[in-house]
Image 1: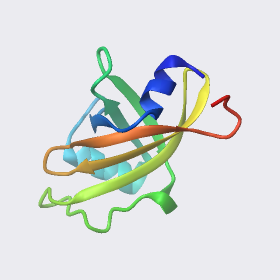
Image 2: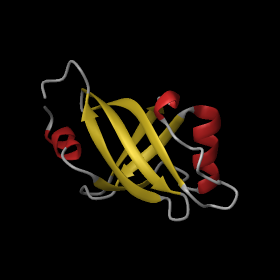
Image 3: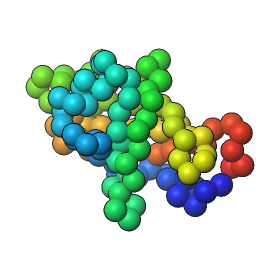
Image 4: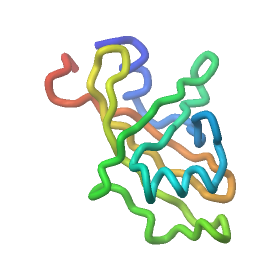
Length: 111
């Protein structure tokens, strides 16, 4: 298993909304319309910004108020990081656009 994948799959890590426009409005648009969000693991050297294709059935956004910037969202989705298929799991506070996250190695990887 790739070293970065292994490290991000051990325990939980600080994350923030990532991508080219890391705003609440952009996060809302990406969750509701595009189904692709950016999650940045801030504890790595320079940060690791990942584009995550959302698994809408596993995401929980019911308790979030994007207009008032309150509540949290639980996001889950898949991507390939350094040739390793992984699932990203992140909980983000809308007031701070930060939270915690982790990677989960998917079937087919040599965990």
